[in-house]
Image (tube, rainbow over the protein chains, first blue to last red):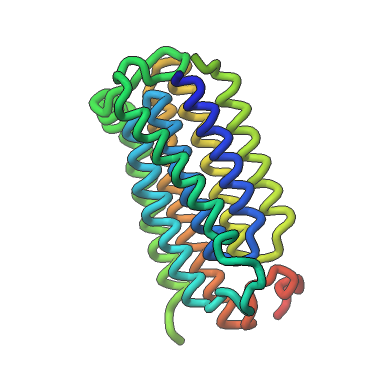
Length: 162
Length: 100
């Protein structure tokens, strides 16, 4: 049962990523990529990584893709001309993929927690994750915070008015 | 039960899709999207390793990957806006000369 859900989600991930990298309009590509990130988040959840799944939705689908959308709309790279294909052909595949993701989410949430993970040593609780993050990897956390600071300074420098 | 090898195959397929996107598309934003896809594929492999050995380190690396992807995208998008201001284009072929 859970293996079937995994393979369905894997197929949906590949399909939505393929759709994302072949789209001509940037906004459509971003929407398909968001769907792909949602599929990946569910796969992470099945693999015993609930915190990573939440981060995938928050950081990738929530922050990074919205940044992409801002830039696409700022640079006015929308549809240059009216398409001739019917409108449902544009949103139909995305809606179908979203329905698959919703159905898989419902199935995963209603199944028992211990039945969820796929093969492997096991589920890592957010508590164990946080302990390992701030005890053994504390120096790396500082390095990442410096990286984010440098990215902030670099983006501000590139976007300055002169 | 899904074997780890199938998860790694999925990760490899996603990485290949990202490489194809970076290599084939001529739009700078699509190239950044390809890089995002590749980073996600690497994250999937990290989580698979974390699951295989029951250690949280793989998941911690996915956290660092997310931070790296966020900084890469913010700097990359700022550069794209700067290039668009200079040449009124986001097409890769317009940036093939070194001295502009």
